[in-house]
Image 1 (cartoon, one colour):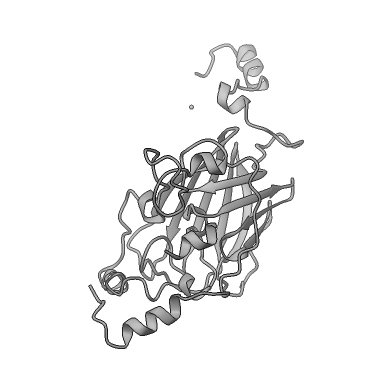
Image 2: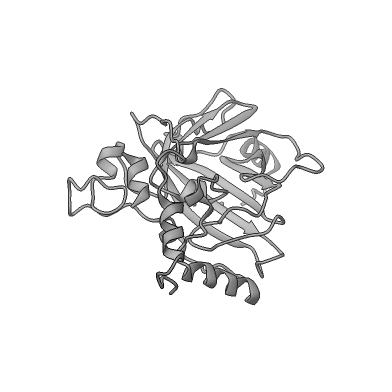
Length: 277
């Protein structure tokens, strides 16, 4: 059903002995942080099925029972799921020429959207699209992200470096490290065939993304993505949203190319209908 609905991110002590004892003792965690599941290595365990771009708790059906795209409509008074564009609070800092290109793509009403042609969405778009679940499987040396959206996966090794010259790909080359209780994922090696967030938000192969995943409670991960692209952006651009745990939800098969009517509809629009904004 989700596939059908799609078509319509803290005093130092003066006493030396006291200071040493304080340094040796672990700092107490907040109640929420203490409740976060942890692996054998003591790191927060991100394992589970999550919904990006959402802030509602509960199972999938409970959190998506409102109206609009992605909602079941069983509770008309429930808030709708956020569209990917709605998690953006700071405008993208495009250079003037690049901004004109974004506007051109927007005015074409998204007919150039790579995802409409069943191409894999990139980073961070994969995370902020709320229509599909994301499964995370964590081990001490590797974390795997599996996205139902376009059946894309990312394998993130922990504590390693990027290859010297990674081949450009849709989701780039990801490596991870822990910064306290936050998983930091560094991503490079992108091609230029994806959009960052909403309609027309293109980028170049110089894109560099730093993602931060912080599990703040048993059912919430705070997600942040900072994008740098000196070819098209004037400065780093950061977006933030939340990922909510969806107990009982499974990532399913998603075959975009089957019965994908978008390309044919776009071709008909270009044949004579005035659809440009």
